[in-house]
Image (cartoon, rainbow, N blue to C red; front, top):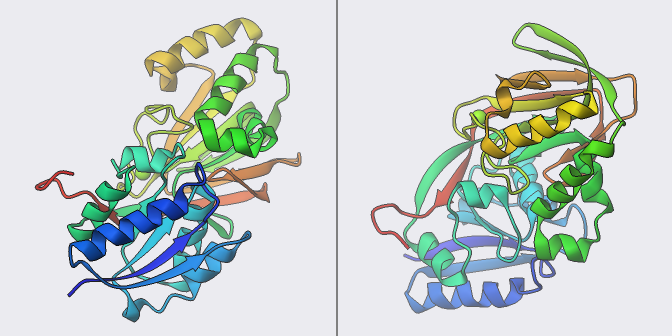
Length: 303
Ligand SMILES: [Mg+2]
């Protein structure tokens, strides 16, 4: 019997090729006799993907397929978590830079994606929770995330989040905007003036493949990186450390792992959740171990 798929797609995502990719995936699957049913849910606004995911009747499908950018994928995961939908999830993010796809070697072409669906392997990955929101990749606040909001969305689609980071890092020497936080994790309290923080499920953030050096999406903990307020003269050595990957030992960096992190601030600080604007501090951030059964390429029969 072929697959029964619930496909949630943002038709305007990526380089506007999502619909062509979808046609191609379906053609490959039905051509190889691997498709029984495909219910296609087209999103047209915020929360559509989440609601489609919440309203999925798990017994009618073999998998949910999320096709779109970070925002679509985040909404599908959020809907699955809120709705208690226990189905394997396949993620297709063609045309966008996606850290989660990179880390998991997820296919970027329609034919490879169809082959993965027809012959899947599974990894049960952790999911992060920030107040009432969920995330697969990262929660962040501070300098670098502001850049993401301000960037033109067409540019965002074309060049991906790495571009924001590079442009933000370039501006780092001129920054003096910091915020005071109280971070509580693992029984420790950190009161610091910081430039930014990231709490990540994945090793790769913003296209930097090993920014979160020790992160593992299956270990039940999230990795946190915070950059402290510092003298401008210390910024260049920190950038050097970031490039070679020994930044977690830098005195201006807090790096920790925990399944439960609280962050408070007296200032108004908005969270960026998987690239979308989320709630503000205070935040309670936790790791839900092995929450999502992710479909990944089969290692025995590589793409
Ligand atoms: Mg982890």
